[in-house]
Length: 294
Image 1 (cartoon, helix red, strand yellow):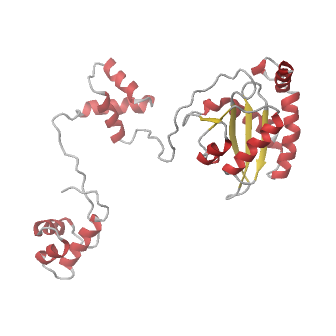
Image 2 (image 1 turned 60 degrees about the vertical axis):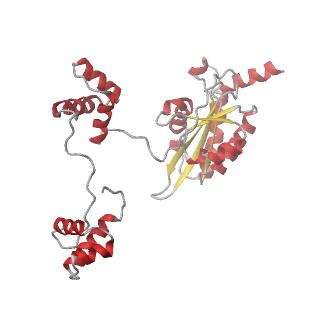
Image 3 (image 1 turned 30 degrees about the vertical axis):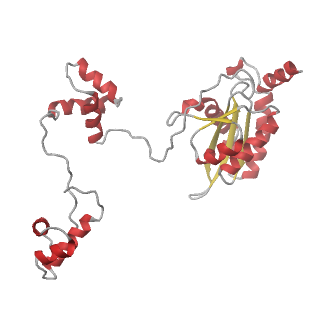
């Protein structure tokens, strides 16, 4: 009987060793292990070393199937997949366009069986979908991200970045450690500096924005899609600008970086014109908000 027991290869090896080196009869080994005598005999035939290597469990997959795909169809599936790297649905449609009738599931299984399927990472947890709001005022949608900078081979420092999508108002701060508590502190500091409240936060699936952070932040929160950095495009672009115009000229020291960030953020929020907001500054949009409220 086929088994998924991971210890079976070692058990088979030990059974063969009892026969070949301890001199036990196959009947005695059968009583000792609980397997039939014919099974012990088969194990002894499979191991030419006489009990010095594990006997792996063979696949339960049948060698032949009356409905299995023909080899030329399999070659076409793999050729299309390797040529364009597109999804199974695209490969399936390409085959139909060529007059090859095959099911979509067969295409998927073939791609997966030959190691060409890009599978979802087991470390990425599923998060329920939260509708993305349309940013009509400051704080409607605030994006978060983290920049990692290598200090040495085994040591890093972390720069947390935050950007309000409506006004492009930005905030950043460097820390020696990265965890959910640091993220919580960073958002609180940013909200005090901004002067307006954050309604919804958006981040990637980094450990610093995990379940504990979402629970403790007491604000609406949504995750960007896995493998879709464009969902956080505004803060990702800010990260690039920040590195090109500020961080590349600063040494890897938390205090020096924070000193440089304070100077740069004053320039970024109050003087730097932004094409995304009609050549205005973030401070102009945030000040207009307060004037409207007043």
